[in-house]
Image 1 (cartoon, helix red, strand yellow):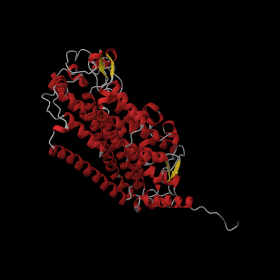
Image 2 (cartoon, one colour; image 1 turned 135 degrees about the vertical axis):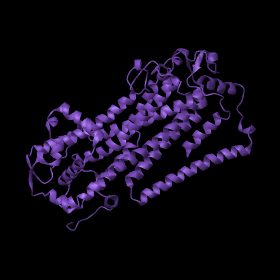
Image 3 (cartoon, rainbow, N blue to C red; image 1 turned 90 degrees about the horizontal axis):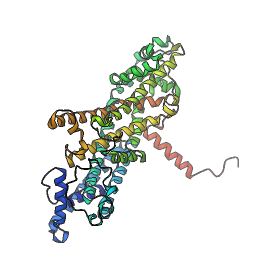
Length: 492
């Protein structure tokens, strides 16, 4: 695989000698001192056996990873998991894109490092204070021209390592997202099985008349707070932490979906939980993708990591410098979860307008309940939160490894919480790790499955209503019909 080979080759090129210390100044000094003293050996001066060993290890690792991906793809095909197979292909495409970026950095390293810019431009937009490295001594090929390098070779190498870390965290977050989502849906299976029992149909006799407010669904959603917009959003905000998907909500939405889109006799035969699971997998292939908008947000993150600016994409700055981006990301996912809860309650309010109902309350689907009449917009927000959370955690781990917690990327550790560096370090690690885990957990275990359920209440029915075998048969039939159109009819 080009990505693994490019990263390992670049790391081997810059790590032939062990750096004596982890501090930023000494690492930079040491690397460029080694370069000035011609410490790097070329392949002409390197034993062939060491070159062969490095080459063999890189190829072996690449082949093993490629084989594992092939095994997973074959298993998904055999299990007729078309959506997950497409998601795997999309992950491979994203890794290939990162591999190409890594390869371009390797090939263009010398060319980029030879670009010279004026000192006035090079001394702007630093992540650290201007005088932090004023005494640093390192070789700059542009110094003779009175200029500075656009990006040094060592800086390109560090960026190279960051791309590798980003790829690892992107794949890891994708696996966690799907795993937690399916874990949440597993408990819905028992509710689905209950709809096949005699007791369920007796209790929800479609010939029995009831007031909508007296049903279990009505008692949960139809109260004094549902009449006030502010109280409605407040209750729905806290509800996502307790029972994001209650049993009565699942059964009512199931009944509303079947009533709107299927025949009445499908109430017993239709497996709504399996349909939701297929819809989750279908949405997952969109969540794992990285759109141009997300790449642009990543560029803004890197651009805004400067001492002079505190934007939404920056790391947690000192208290005096502004808001915390982690809490802003959490606010987005909490807003999405609250909106989904509000949609369920509003469907209950609509059902109440009928007064008297028969059997289970019938909630009416509609895109008008969603922001901009677009249910997919919520999926974009979920995708945005997952990507940005993975990106920022990857950036944090990379900057910790490359520069340590005393670097200017973690300036608030020095300005921060009045506990001394060691105490602040412990508190910050606990704070940062737990907050990232909470965001990932809320997004994957609470919001994403809730989205898969509530979006079935849109105006349109998803193609995942058909099983993978039926969907494949329909696509094949459609392709065959296009290739062999009728040229004549019995009446021609």
